[in-house]
Each structure stands twice: as structure tokens, then as C-alpha cells.
Amino acid sequence: MATLKERLGKISDRVKEDKFIEGRGLGNEISFYIFDYDPKDELEVRDYVTSLHKEFKGGLYDRRVIEFDLYKMLIEITKDKNIFDRIAEMETRQGKDALFQAMTTFAKPEIFLEKIKQQIEEHNVVLITGVGKVYPFVRSHNILNNLQEVLDKTPVIMFFPGQYDGQSLELFNKFKDDNYYRAFRLVD
Image (tube, rainbow, N blue to C red; front, side, top):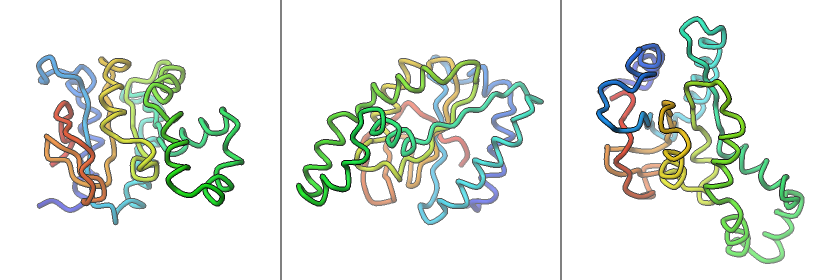
């Protein structure tokens, strides 16, 4: 089995391939990929995503990469809705369950998708990060299921702290997120 470093080293080459951008070889499937990894490697993966941005920043390979960190987006959404400053107080006064209910009420996939649509512009590769940081308020399979309506021609790579076997997602190697079979493993 390949090490994390070996697997990360293959991502850039995959993104550079014409068939990655054009979606060739996928039949009629959408170009959604999942890079799964052991959650203990989160910081190393974050560093890699930063270096991937730098590599493609100059446009040398005609890859215009944009990252959507779901956690940062959730924070933006709470600020947009003027509840960010009240979150800690709500949890203290009403408890975790009330906070969970409040957060999931407005942190719907449609809101994330709208933000993505507004920011995608001319980018032709989308990276989704922050999946573990935003759990349980946002579920990765919900984002992927809804994202296909917005980005059916743009390749998406979701960096997933857990396991993806081509059929289901298991966050943190503990929580079965749900069945999701429309994405491909980016690197074995």
C-alpha cells in the first residue's frame, strides 16, 4: 500500500492530465474525485493543498484551482446571518443539541452551493476541504449530491479525512456518512 506522501505526490500529475479536465474516460459520470486519508494526517494534507495552489497559481498548466473550505464557509454563513457572536452563548445556555438544531437549520447545502456558484468564476478545478472540521453540521455526501447540479463540467476533488471505498464515505474511519457512489478515488 502506498504511503500518504506517495499518494499526495500523484495528485498534481492527475490534475495536469487532459482527461482530468475534460472528464474523458468517465463515461457520462461527473468528474468528482475523493482523496481519502487517515485523519491523523490532516495537517500534512492541508500543507499539501497549500502547495498545490502555489504550483498551479501561474496558470502554466491551464489549471485555475479554487479551494472551498467548508468550515470557513460555515463561519462566513454564520456571520452573514448575524449569529456568529451568539453561538457560544447559545451552546452554554441551551446546550449542544439546541446548537446543533440551530446550525443545521440554516447550514443547508443550498447555501454552500450558492456561495460556490458566486465564487467559481473562471476556475476549472475545485478543491473541497474542511470536511472534518465542519462535521456534524454539514455532511460531505449532501454537499457532493447537491454540487453535481452546479458543477457538472468542473472537476471536483474532495479531501476526505476517513475512508472512501467507491460506495460509501466513513468520516474519521468511524462515522458512516452515507452511501455515495458517483465519485472516483483520485489516487489509490
